[in-house]
Image 1 (cartoon, rainbow, N blue to C red):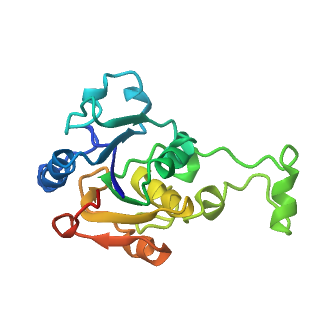
Image 2 (spheres, rainbow, N blue to C red):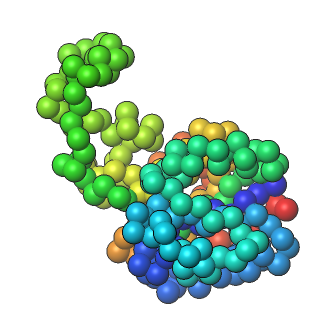
Length: 208
């Protein structure tokens, strides 16, 4: 069974009217057949707002509404993956605004080797205590998505990669994922290489 997971589709994050219109149909189809529709927000400033304000698609009482303190919603909500598996969900269709809560590694705390000796042991090499965290170590998917060497993965990418690790099949809706400027994201090829399916929204039918 499929679940449709929409991440950061509030009006400040999902700013493209064209992409919103693309998603309207699949959201409507999901609701019509009683499918599993999940709205997730990763933005601190929206943590306390009403559920219906978390998305331009206005979540209702039948939808699952989540608030994550991390861009990777499976990391921010640790019981999400087990709960979805218990519901019989084995495939996740994902779209939304690819929001990054940390724009670059300049904003990330440096590694303190004295407090975290395991880092040096695991690396099996000298560790520079003043060096920023390595992107591949931070999220398992790498940070290079074509937007700059120092960029961290946004919420849609991080969650899609985590869903794969959690043993879900993943479909990324290529025409319904946008970056903070409302433009198409550039990491779809790397997501496909990692095992995600990349499909147009109109070509995707959810299994209920």
